Amino acid sequence: MTNVAKVINGKLIASELRAETAVKVENFKKEFSKVPTLAVVLVGEDPASQVYVSTKSKMAKEIGMDVEDHYLDVTVSEEKLLEVVNMLNNDQKVNGILVQLPLPSHIDSRLIIDAIDPIKDVDGFHAINVGRNSIGGDLLDKTFTPCTPLGCYLMLKNHISDMKGLHAVIIGRSNIVGKPMAQLLLEESCTVSIVHSKTKNIEEMTRQGDIVVAAVGRPLMVKKEWIKPGAVVIDVGINRVDNPNTGKNKLVGDVDYDGVAEVASAITPVPGGVGPMTIACLLKNTLDAALRQEKSK
Ligand code: GUN
Image (cartoon, rainbow, N blue to C red):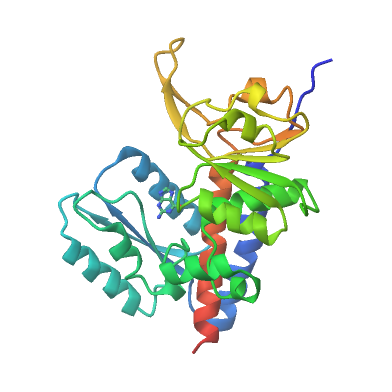
């Protein structure tokens, strides 16, 4: 009989996390007589970024937060963008700042991210927060963990209570997902490998993983043969591909879901897996930011 993997329901776990955060938002409002506030900065009109940003704003409002959207023209100068970030840093009402990436090529993204006050850096991308995530331990209470890897981690935790000693293979070495994912899983005492576009025998390496996290942005790259029977597979990919049957496009992950579900013990779907978790984690980080800012007064 063919194995059929358990589906890890990111949509459901995310809605539970949002409900928990909504209760904390209510308590925050009562205790401090103010509303946790997220500022979202979007430069340009990239359609995918527009969808992400509007979903983030909508979800934040749904759980009782305030959201300030700052939409800037694609031609905005680095200097002007820095001014906006500084204005948000100094605005007492704003608790969390998110600058949607990627930024246009004439802007130095690192310069912009490192201009965000680390206590408002709800993406966890500022070099100080990256450093704290890397050191781990007690410093994890002082940092923000990037939302996508945090979402992946919470889904893994929901499925595997003790990850100690498991071999986790992460496909992709980005600063947004691959590297922080490795830190989180090391903190859980996993054995961690990161494989990427230059890795020799990527298929063979991936097949060693008890846990596989795919974050490469290549539609359906990870096939059934890449996966050890019984592995838990997290698919971070959100790729739009043409559907020849309907003439429209559809979302697919980095994992060939149908094939991999025949060998994995559990798998996240696309859509309905990592995507909703990323947003729920952003809201959690924003509430944490608001609480930390109150405590530091
Ligand atoms: N672009 C893709 N993912 C992210 C994210 O998590 N945060 C921001 N700011 N930009 C992104």
